[in-house]
Length: 268
Image (cartoon, rainbow, N blue to C red):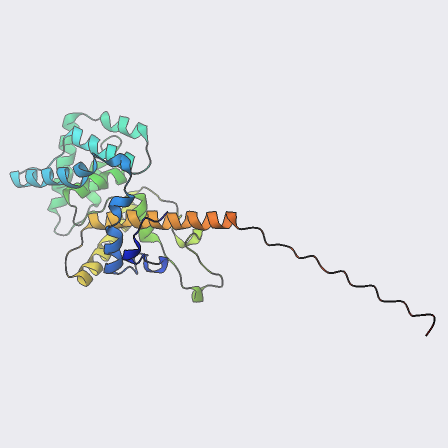
């Protein structure tokens, strides 16, 4: 169910796709993140969005940025509570040694910083050498190092960036928010190639919105807005389904029986 205040002029679905959204509507949805964010991440939210990024920034100034094993475990705990909980993933991450985590994260951050323009591919590959760390978890770690250009590979961000609402005039049938072929329910592939597309789309969006806003829009803000938009759209889909289920089936009108044609009178 939508939690957006009516004061914010709840954006219509047609205005929400990433390729169409205005800075005004983006800012509206970004402001809704706190209301939509899962309650179970409380206590980890500050660590994910502020503490660890600040620690990494300071370590970078001191000469070497890296993450401790406990810090990586906390990020993975946040990820699992933020999205789908997979207990085996936490166990795999815990099996990495302290030195492995330090060396691998340090190497990944160094590789990322060596590029003239932000390119996460090699750093994502490096981080994925750790047990339990795939492209999505690797993007989370890297996004803490560079919240400005590196988006976290969340389900919500992936769906939003690939979501389209096609003009009714371009199709023979009406397309609605819950239509499967609009990209919202597309199967997500947690691969480096999929993340590369997310990275590119995020930064194209950042560039467009930054020009419109007159200020830099960070990837972490795109991530938060995407989450709120996802919950808004999913809420509308559920409402649409509930309304559809509650609607009475169309009544079938009985055909009126034709009156029998009177037989000719024998007498006139």
